[in-house]
Length: 100
Image (tube, rainbow, N blue to C red; front, side, top):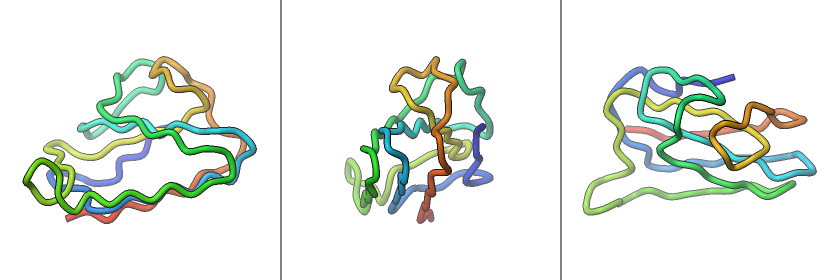
């Protein structure tokens, strides 16, 4: 399952991923309005260890405010690092984005 977190252009200023699972998860993200799990190649990928919360601050990236996207921010969460993986986590992972 993919989630479109925004409807258009913007920047990620802060992200928090809460993984309650007993296994690591991988959040894949792409600058697009949609994606297909197992087919779309992610532009960014973050690993979150088992039973861990990962918080990331993107206040300034390469001299610009936040991590920019032009089409939209779409993401999906799976158990393996490879973008062709389609198996999701055992339990729901909570994702928060602060965008501008």
